[in-house]
Structure formats: structure tokens, C-alpha cells
Image 1 (cartoon, helix red, strand yellow):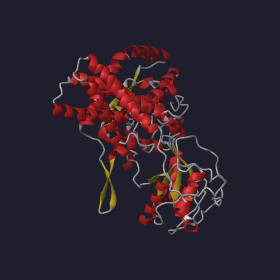
Image 2 (cartoon, one colour):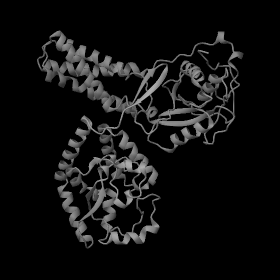
Image 3 (cartoon, one colour):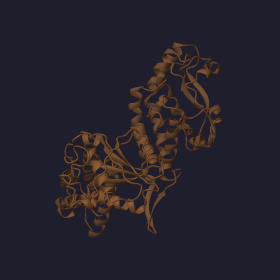
Image 4 (tube, one colour):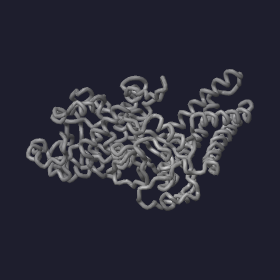
Length: 514
């Protein structure tokens, strides 16, 4: 069963199936949804194989345009810079660099449509390509004995990187890119419910489950349309049922949740048919909470293995994080000195008590330290907390209230803008905290942690973090812990830079701050 395609004259499936695109193209899509009735495609054996043309993917017209953009975006500026710098053979050198650039980008998969979770067009992806380009060109110059000035050569390549980053950003802002991928989920009912529930519970990914195809008689409970169903055992119409369901709901990605009824041979046959039909295929792994950058696939003895790299605890990135923390904190304290003075005066005049609030928190490896904040509560707030324990709105060890009566008028404004946290730059400068990381907990909170929650203390606490940009205090305790644990295991400098950028948007939004 190397190829299956739904014939144009087939009217046995859901309404609209004949007009469904085969295969997917970059053009506009028909968003009409088929009537929700369980459908099984006719058995493949009943179809006329001789008259079916083979499904072929049409080439994406954006691919040559992107390659041409890279070629000219690096070649033309490089030629101008080399010529202005009186370098030998500027045209030949620029043309060679442009060809190598497009070759590197092609080799690294920038001209193929990856899964939306892959950041091929992200700035750090283009930067990696650019560094690879410099390495290749350095080897070529050494072998040919070229007389180019290295500094001028590197400067000549910078515009090409800028063009690639801008082109990638433009691609991500296209309506089709922002819409993400429409996903058909295939698997046993329990796996379907889990996969659809997780996909639909969060919005920080580009996948949207539009329909499911259960394997076996059990009915899924995920509330998603069920346009088709396949038998518990292998059947000739497996592929045609999945293809028909995908086309009827305009899905361009099939996500398979493995189980006992989807064995190796059945999954392989399904992959053949889906790829022939122009659909992408993903197989759900039981591995969760691990960033893609930490996973490396390998094959051994006919098995597909996933190597999981350990979290970053030492090495170049850890050292760089420390340097960025200290330098960023020092620059922040200098730049924000006028803000510190203005806020200090406002706090002092608004209510009796000190300007700063000092509190013992637990840091890296559960070591205590003194954390600084601008005071946002009345002076005797700690003694009043016991009387408010009964109205704690958090189900975990953390205490929080939307309308805490201890917060002063100026304190509400400081909390909404997170300005009250700025004195923690002193803690970052001292090394007690980092710019990015889990929030530092109180000792009494840590005393109630279980083993899973204690892992939050495996890294330095941060001034901002993943849960602060994902809802702040509106999140439940378990959601907060899950986000912090993801960061503890998967942080990188690229992640930190992204979270710092998202923090600005979260602060200006103000939601979840109380």
C-alpha cells in the first residue's frame, strides 16, 4: 500500500470531500467543516488503482523567492562593502559568499517547510547559519590564499544576516503562519483525549486539533469532531479514512498517538500513504517537558532512539548567564537611579514605614538570602498575614489575594507595573538571584514542598520568569510549578533573552499583577 488518494468522483465520504485540496498548497483554504457523522472510506481494494494519478506535492512558490532573497540580500551588500574597501575581486568574492550562504541555508533546511514548533526562521537559527557561513568561508580563503581583509569580510556579511532575520520575521507574520497548523489526531481514545486536551489547553504553540480519528470502538471524550474511525486491527482502508478525514477538515498535519493497536508495521504503512497524499506526520512521544534543543534522534538495531541532553548547569552558557546577570544588573541600577529616587519618595510619603521591604527567601540549593523590594504594604503586613490565611486564594503553599487589604494605594500601582521588584537588581548584582529564573519562595512555603516542587531550587531564582510572562498571579499553583520546572530543565541564553523581551509586554499589559 504505497499510495492512496481519494478519487474526485468519490462521494461516499463527508460532503465537500471532493473539493478538498489534494495535496496541500500555499493558497487560501476552504474553511467549511463537513457534517459530523462517522464515516469510513471504501476499502482500497474496491477502487480502480490503474486510473488513479499519483498524488504529488506542488512546489512551494515561496521557496525560490526565499532563496533569491538570501542570495541577493547577502551578495549585493557584500559586493558594495568589498568594493568600497578596495578588496581584491569584490564581485567574485561576493558571488561566492552568496552561493555558499544559500547552500548553508539549504543544507540546514531553511527552504523546506518544517513543523511550526521548529524555529527555522527565528533569529538564533539565522545566526547559526551565519556563523557556519563564516566558518566555511574562512576555510575557503585559507585554501585559496585570498587576500581579503578578515574584518572587512565579516562586515560585508552582516547585511545578509539582517536580511535573513527580517525575511524570517515577515514569514512568521504571514496570516497562514500566524494561523499555525490544523491537526488531525489519530489514536486510541485515551491517547486522543490526552493529546487534544493538552493542545487545546494552551496557546503558546501553533497547533490546533480540528478533528480526531479513533482507533477501535471506544469513543473519545475530547469534544472534537470525529469524521472517521479505523478498526482495531490493520485494514486496507486505514490510510484512505485518515486522508479523507484530514481533507474534509482541511488539516495539513496528522498527529499519531501510539498504542497497542498502532504497531510498527501499521504506523509505517500509514506514513507511506500520508506522505504520498501530501500530509505531514508527527508521532507523539511519551517524553514531555523537554525542549526540542535537548533531544537528538538516533537509530540503533532498527530502533529509533531519542538522546536527551542534561540540563545546563555549567559550561559556556552558564558562565555567559552569570556575566549577563551581573552586567545587566549594574547597568540597570545606573540607568534606573532616577526611578529609584522617585519611587522611594512616593513610598515614604504615602504611608508610615520604611521605603524598602526586606524578606528572607530561599535561593539556589535552598540557601536563604535577604531579598529587597519597594514596600507596597502597610508596615505590619507580616503580622496581619495569619488573620488572612483563611481567605488565601492559592491552593498551594503560596499566599495570594486579588484584593489584599494590606496593600497601600501606591503599592497597587507599583505591583501592577512590577516596579516594586526593581531593588532585586541588587540581589542579582550580589549573585543571590538571576535576571531570569523561578521566583524565590518563602521558607515556610519551601517547608511544604514535595520532591517535585523542590526542584525549582536547582537554579538561581530570577527577577522574572516563565510564569511571570504566562499569566502571573492568575495561574494556579500547579501551573506555576510546571512552568518553573520546564525552565529549570530547559533554560538557555536564547530562552532568557526571549523571556526578558516578553516581560516588557507582560508588564505593560498588567494582567495577573496583584
